[in-house]
Length: 150
Figure 1 (cartoon, rainbow, N blue to C red):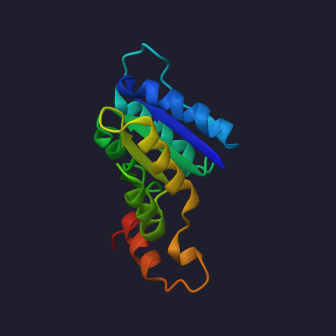
Figure 2 (tube, rainbow, N blue to C red):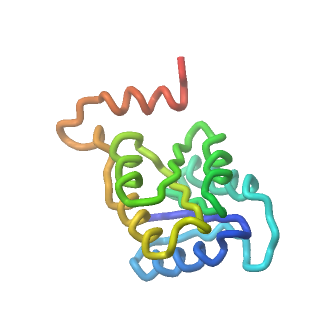
């Protein structure tokens, strides 16, 4: 899977650990920055992540900041992105299954590496319910309203 990952300065360590682990797992990973030691503003990196997910360069995105909140807000400014703040695997799986989330956000100051890996695994392995045989369309109808509320 093609995955983009970005963070602010509070989450570069978690970003590096997740990036390296995802590569070991066989995924193609685009690290959008920043590098260690850079003080940056999370919206800049949330916007970068959203752009590569929206244009199809990456199939999924992982956004990281201290709490996960700020960067998730910036990713969600792009109408093509649905970024869910997750802190455990069930919320990551439900974000995919019910909301067709194409990005997740994790708070590096709140979530350790093993829990972050569990969240990412659930996010990657779970399919959107309405893309599966027997899907009722009820989730897709709701997801469509996220990008166009009319």
